[in-house]
Length: 456
Image (cartoon, rainbow, N blue to C red; front, side, top):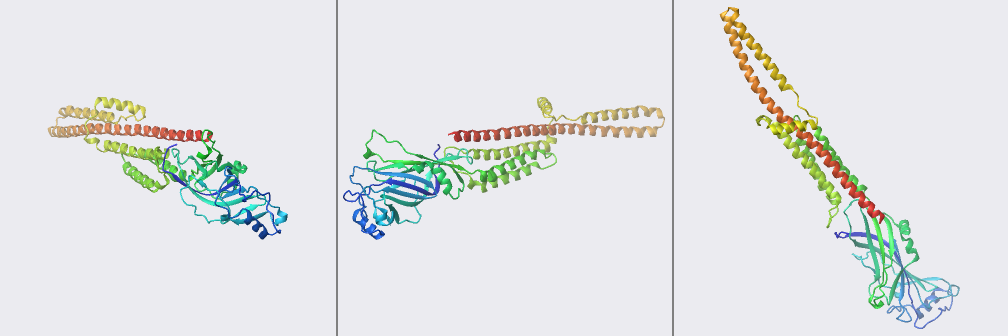
């Protein structure tokens, strides 16, 4: 998993921490005897035996570890329960099977969450329950803000696994041992029932884990722990609607801009406006993108490809517009370029029309007719008419020369214009192929990563 900027996840956590805590009186007893079946008599009896002895762990022998069982619920309370070893009473004799006591009156285990990044800002609780079997239950609300290393390569279609590690801050395994409550196996189902709003994330699993004890290390040198793995999946609908779909629409609009005739419409102005709008769109949507670490998210690659395609399309439009607008000043096409033009035109179905040849034929016909007029003039026998015809012949010949020169220039211009149109068509085809290939590759990478992590 890549090391990225830690994400702060905020949960109200119901952590039911049940532990068998040997809260013992100074001398072993079998039961607490009440003078009468009232809460006051029970409280008096407890004060004489176990209450307000919080300096040390409530065990008869310090060699006996305190076993703490953990349960965990998203959006809930840290519940602490334990059995007071040697403590019990008869509910009928004492008048109640459970009594609430101040939390400061008994020993409380120092269970902490290693991934905690901020102080617990929820209201404090001051009481706990003790039942007639000696079981003490303490419920603590926790507002957990934790850090989690995220793999955002497939953002926003990513699934994250964040862990909460519970252990005693001071006591080693020789004093405090943690175990999973039976209800911890159903923690996911219980959390789904109690969870409120999911926000950006969807809870898809909670996996409890009890790390194995290292048999080669003394219990006095180890800290027992319980780990809960929270599997979260990001809700991608917001990012698809706000990022992916607008980008696809703008790229599609850029593709359809190739249908604008470059010789009659200023296509470059349209494309520059499109690029400017897309740049402003990316700046506005920048807050939705993740802060990257070692890996670049695929969505960043997708957005960069979209922008690069638009810029490449603008460069192609500038090149074609230059060919179409400045073709009159260019010399005649070289033979090798003319041969490539003919092959490319056949490939993209843009064959050149035959208007220049038809114009040449018309000029040839005009020349022949002018020659006939000059040859037939001497047979008329009218000098004035003959001179007039000669003048007309000279004028027609001058017009013919000018028209031929103009047609030669038009033919050169048409060749360059034809070259520009062929290049425009070829680059349009490559544009479509590149867009299709890029989008398919990104989609395949997303799907392959999703299938890989969904199986694990």
